[in-house]
Length: 160
Image 1 (cartoon, rainbow, N blue to C red):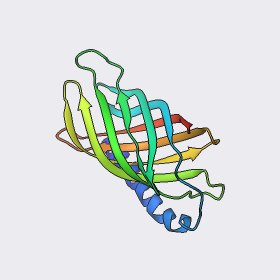
Image 2: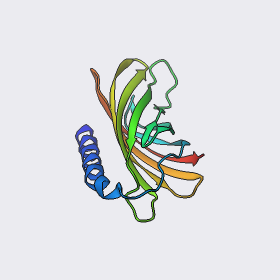
Image 3: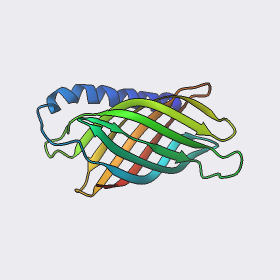
């Protein structure tokens, strides 16, 4: 599972790198913000599916803070919650309609529960602007520490 998600992350980063130069000529803004809720999947405590809350807060031209939380929904003492705090580079839209925006970045992951830990985080994903007020988001996150985790998020967000 970890190898598959790492491969998916590598493929996403490669795709973003290949498509980004062609997209740089477009002038569609990347300065939207959102707060979303969705599903977390992958390595999430003792589960492979959980609740995800994510967001995007624009810091400057093509740079955002994307804090998020993924929980395995086991709120007992052995439950796990991951807090992700990455800063991302937001590539310009890669589709002619200007709705699909790839991003990649790094930050800090904080895991709570029985195996609490703190370590670096790598992330890559896509935002799809459905309307001015709705954004779909997919991301792959690699939390790097003693017991590294790879997980993903699929969410819908309110854009403001």
